[in-house]
Amino acid sequence: MSDARARGIVSDVDRRRTGVRWSLRLTQGFLLLATLAVGLGPILWTAKGALSPTQDLLREPLRLWPSSLQPENLTAAWTELRVGHYLFNTVVLVGGSWLVQLLVAATGAFALSVLKPRFGRLVYGAVLATLFVPGTVSLVALYLTVLDLSLVDTPWAVWLPAGAHAFNVLIMKQFFDALPSELYQAAQVDGAGPIRLFWQIVMPMSRPILAVVSLLAVMDAWKDFLWPMVAISDAESQPLAVALPRLAETAEQNQVIAGMLVAIVPPLLLFLTFQRHIVRGISFTGLKG
Image (cartoon, rainbow, N blue to C red; front, top):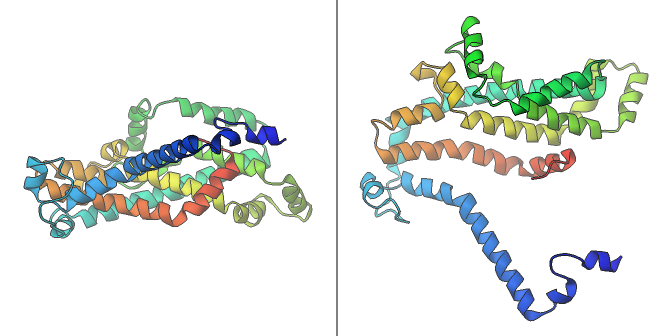
C-alpha cells in the first residue's frame, strides 16, 4: 500500500534529495507565474490601455505602464460612448438568456433523469447529437425562424435560442443521476407529484449544479457576438459586445478599451463571488478538464 502511494513522477525518496526538491519548487513557481501571466495578463493589459493616453497606445503599444494616468477615460467612455446604456442592454439580454437556459436545462434533465419517459434515451441521444452541430450551420435557419415569428430586434430573439444548450442538459442530468433514487421513491410514496418532486426535492439539493450552469449561461451570453449582431440590427438595442466594435471606428482608442474594461468586470466579479459553489458543482458532476 505504501509503495502504491509512493509511486508517481517523482518518488518520496527522490523528493528528499536537495537538488530534486529545489528543482520541483522552481518548476512549481514557474508554472504558477506562467498561469498568473496567462490569466491576469489580458486583464491588466486592458486596464493599462483604459488608463493610458491615446498617443501612448499608438506610439508605444507594448509599454508596460502609461506615461500619465487618465482615469477620466472611464468617465468619457461611460458618457460619450454611452457604455452604460449598452451595458444595460447586455444585462437584459444576459438575464433573459440565463433564465431560459436554466429553466430548459433543469426541466429537461429532470424529465430524462427522474421521470424517465418511454423514449427518454432516444431524446437524450438526440440532445447530445446537437453538440456535434456547429452553431454557424443553423444560423440561417434560426434567423428565418425568428423572422417568421416577428422576433427580430426584440430580446426574445436572443432569449429563446439560448435555451437550446445541450451541454447544460448533459451536466444537470449527470448531477440528477447522482442523487439518491430513494428520495424520489419516498416522495412518490408520500403522494408527491412531478411538480412537487421537482421544486421541493430536487431543486433544493441542486444549488451547486445550478451555480455551475448559471455561470456557463452568463459567460456564454455575455461574450456572444455573432447572434446578437444578426438578430438585433437596431443600434440602440445592441449589447456591449456588439456596440464596441462599431464604436471603435470613430471613438478614441483608449475610450474603447475603457469600455472593454467595463465589460470585463461584471463576469469577473460574478465568478469570484460564486467560485466555491462552482467548484463544488463541477466536482459533483464528475466533469474534468
